Length: 163
Image 1 (cartoon, rainbow, N blue to C red):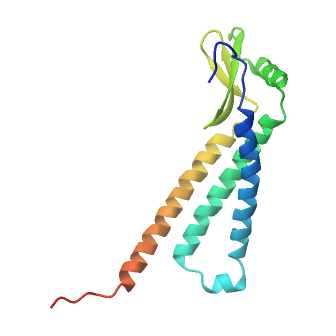
Image 2 (image 1 turned 180 degrees about the vertical axis):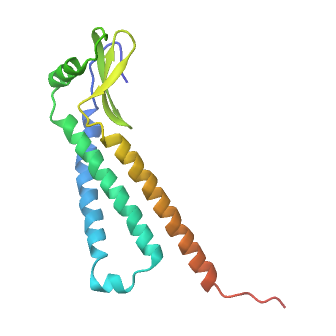
Image 3 (image 1 turned 45 degrees about the horizontal axis):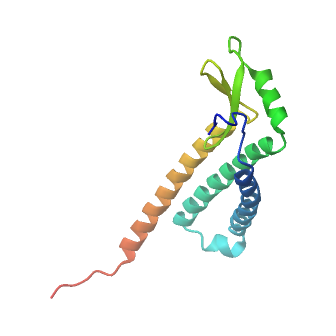
């Protein structure tokens, strides 16, 4: 959030650092797990439930990779360079800039103008829409996996007899 005392604040460095430390570690762990699903032993035990679960995890992993990629764009720009990026991308008719703010959800660096309009810079435009689609795909795959798991459990549950 932009405050009156400092309207030129981008992303919080502590949060950005945490994302850039935890994100790659999580990506490595998820990638190692997903690669382990291709071993001969894992392929023999593959079920439709597991395939949908792994598809969901794959979509989340790719979304996380894109998010980290977007964060890297922010990391390597100093405050002055962010302001210069705002100036270069300023649309015609937009008066002077009054501030910059960094949002993590959606990931963007927002340039704020004196007329109340704002616009995003630095983060590639494909990042947020692609992440949204991948997360929706992941949710759909997870729901299919959960439904298949539920059907499998109810089909194998022993019938209770009443006396």
